[in-house]
Image (tube, rainbow, N blue to C red; front, side):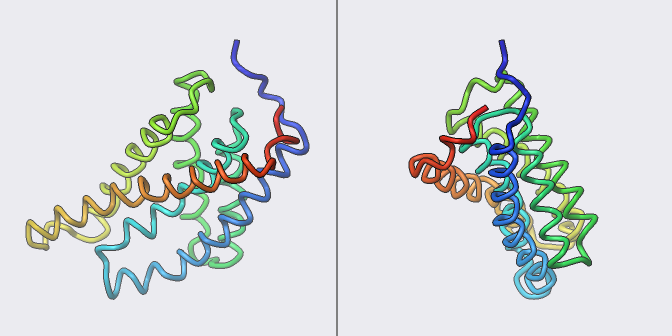
Length: 183
């Protein structure tokens, strides 16, 4: 039987705190995006990959259904307040990335919390990021080595940020943050 989907106030507040903290990072990423695209566009996948953090931290810390999506939406709202020119993209990314993270967790019936499961969602997100980056950057105009590097960075960006998110979530759980937010 899957865990209850009813979320307590402490779970919602924990999701909100994660969303605010990662939303600030998302807002900074929003302001960095045009600079990165104009100067070192090959790093765009790393900037975009930072948006996986809310769901990864929430799922690693709380381990309940819906926490990834809730944390992503809060993060998108905070990031939108900081960089309003990207508001619709922040919200779309939140729903897409949070949805993918929730779907991968649902496929394991919210019972498998091993690192591989988080990295599976990161790879799926990374592939989507690579497709978006390919269209946004007009990769066909670049040399083959640049295309390959660009796509590799786009896929590995979310994977690297997932490792960071897992580290943060694990540290928060060890510090006792999740103790009051379970169910």
